[in-house]
Structures are given as C-alpha cells and as structure tokens.
Length: 105
Image (cartoon, rainbow, N blue to C red; front, side):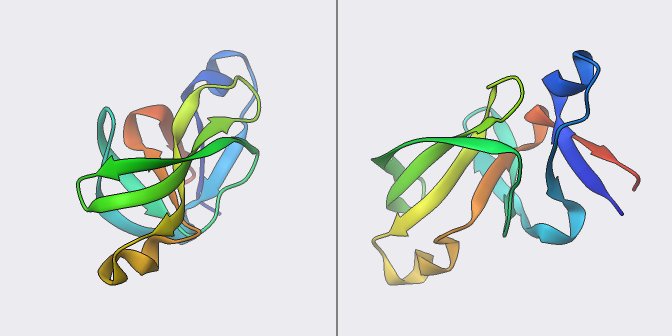
C-alpha cells in the first residue's frame, strides 16, 4: 500500500506515516511553501489551535497540522469554510509536498 510519511521522521530513523496515497483528493493545491495535496484523512499528527485565516480562496477556520513524531509543521486542516463553494474542504487536510515523502508507489 502506498503511504506518505514526514521528511524529518525518516531522517531520525523512523517512518511515521501521515497519510495514504488513496486519501489524496487533489494535487492542485498551494501550501505556505509551494505545492500541496488535499487529503481526506491524515494520521499520526498533532493539531494546533483553530484560527481564522485568509487564504487564496477566502476566509477559512484552520488548524495547523504537525508530525506526531518530530512536530514539524506539515500543513493544516480545514475546520470551516465560509464560502459555499469551498465547503468541500471542511474536515480535509493540506499536506505540503516538500514536507512529506512517498513510499511504495
């Protein structure tokens, strides 16, 4: 099964899986530091506090997502979208491509 794990966890000798390839909803997203993927699920993560953030597509309530192992910021979770066209993002996760490594593809 194809999995994704945090870049830093691999460096420290562990492979802390953060999502499955099958959970990718879209590869056409932008993170803070470049390309990002939208995932339906994430695992082995720690979430930060919820906050309102003005993103490219409007105002959203989000919570930063950290690797459960090394605490590196991997992206964020969409908690609430204020525009009707963005509601599909609620409950989903943005993980930045530069922060994750794919395995078994």
